[in-house]
Amino acid sequence: MLSQLSDFLQRKIIWESPERALALYKKAPKALIEWFRVANLRRTIELAGTKSIFYGELFARHPFELKTVGSPKDLFPIFTTERDLVTYPSQHFLCARADTAFESTGTASKTPKRIFFSNRELEDAGRIGAAGLWRLGVCASDRVVSSFDYSFWVSGPALKAALEGIGAFHIEAGRMDPKDFYDRVKPYHCNVIVADPGWLVRLSEVAEKEGPWPLKLMIAGGENLAENSRRYAENVWGAKLILSYGQTEAFGMIGVECPEQQGYHINDMDLWAEIPAPDKDGYGELVYTTLRRSVMPLIRYRSGDVTKLIHEPCRCGVSSPRLAKLKGRADDLAVTSVGNIAPWMFESAMDAAGLRSAEWQIKLSQAERRDTIEFHIEMSNGASAETLREKMLEGMKLELGVARQGILQGLAGFAVKIHAPGELKQGRKLKRILDQRTF
Image (cartoon, rainbow, N blue to C red; front, side, top):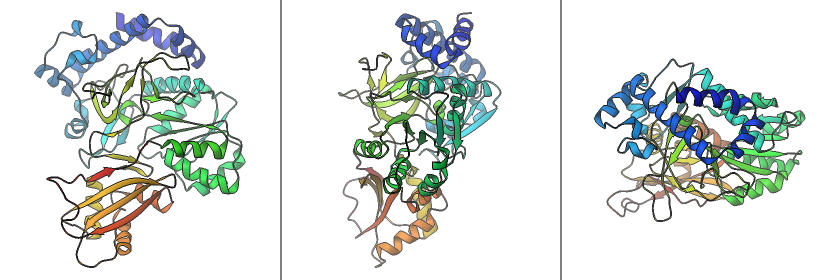
């Protein structure tokens, strides 16, 4: 009964319009918000335990009393991992009929994580996104253009649903070459651009040469962005660049900055975030639980991203918790301006290029406002670095096609460094991807 009341209040009253949602959320007592969260948490746990094969078996191995659960940490040692999503059949996670699905690639396997949703959940994501965009100043009179890739990725459909809630003009240009994008989009007089951060920096370099058009706002998500690169893009366009953070598993949106740009505001009505094992500075792996999903709810999902919770109220006036900018990955996956990269992806590229070697390493750095990918390899056959670079680019077509395209478009630098045998490995284990970027 309580869960039904919670659902009615949120659907029929709170999310009736973006303005109403924001106004009521700001005015709502913390005790009421917490009541909603706990009610939704218990409903999600009960649904997953009775309808999902995976969670039914997991809960049986780690029994608990539902009525005693007041937060996800009460479910310890229960977690859901990326490996679970690719090891178990997708049907084992489903609690209801799915209408659509999206994919996300991680480091656990070459098999993508397949995440399923209903059309109703897509509508809900649109309402939430509309409220977030409205808070950033996006309204019905604005003209929005997106360069998100639509291939199995949730970001494009989620943005479209949000803009429908606002009623703004919307163009999906896709992840095309920034110069082509500039030429084709400029005549539409769009004043809001939504894109990947690294791609947006490249577009800004084009605009610096060709001349920017008037912009109201830029919104970027999909990877980290160094602050000097953010300021560069803002100076070129004369508009703020707001960063968002999300994963396909969370329907694309975990948090988004406000104009203060001091951390990602979490939608805590739909997502319960925790850092189970923080270090002395509060940083650790983000773990989250979805609170209002009926098709494929996720309980204590290990995101693989290292961040911390910020509990101090933001200067914008919203007191909900925020997430700090990501420090990196808890696993070997790295998020770059040309997409996610993982060790197994480069192994496939090396196989295709005939470059298997005893030891190799990827080093990520930044130069001239863009990511640089350096492929370090031990070889003694006298091959030149330039020849190996061309072979690696050819080999990338198989598993790193998006990254290869981004490199050819100038979104990131790519270089090969040759080392003598035994030079790379200094300890017992060589870290395959070494991220030396500072954000």
